[in-house]
Amino acid sequence: MVLAMVASVVLVSLTIIVHYEVLRMTSLILPRLTMVRPRQRIVFVIYAAFLAHTIEVYFYAVAYWLMEQHFGFGNAVMQVGNPRQLDFEDLVYFSTITYTSVGFGDVVPLGGLRLVSGVEALNGLLMIGWSASFTYLCMQELWPQHVRRKRH
Picture 1 (cartoon, rainbow, N blue to C red):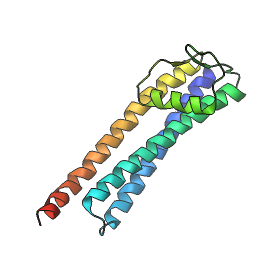
Picture 2 (picture 1 turned 90 degrees about the vertical axis):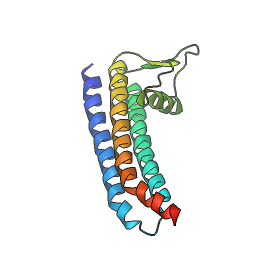
Picture 3 (picture 1 turned 135 degrees about the horizontal axis):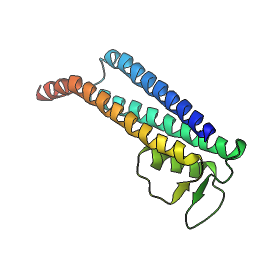
């Protein structure tokens, strides 16, 4: 359980750093895109946020894989209805449905990974909210330019 708590703290810290840096770089690049139409700049913001979330999902998938393979969490995640050793692709899937709080229930964590996956769901909700807020602020600035440009 201690390893799961440490892993959770490390993963939350990494995701916050990645999210902050991706959004910071996006906010630095956005004003320089003056030759790009507002519509494309808004799409750029969405792609940047999506990139951050993808990196974060993969952090958790790698952590699940490492915990299963190297830290004694053998068979820490199982697939319901088709018990088998999960491969990395399955762990990316599990991480994605956990991060987004979809939670289909076809893959379930066992042991200490229950804590890590619960933290991932909370972390994902926070990061998605952060992205939504950032996108809103960018759209608030760019949307009037889009409307003005369209009228001319």
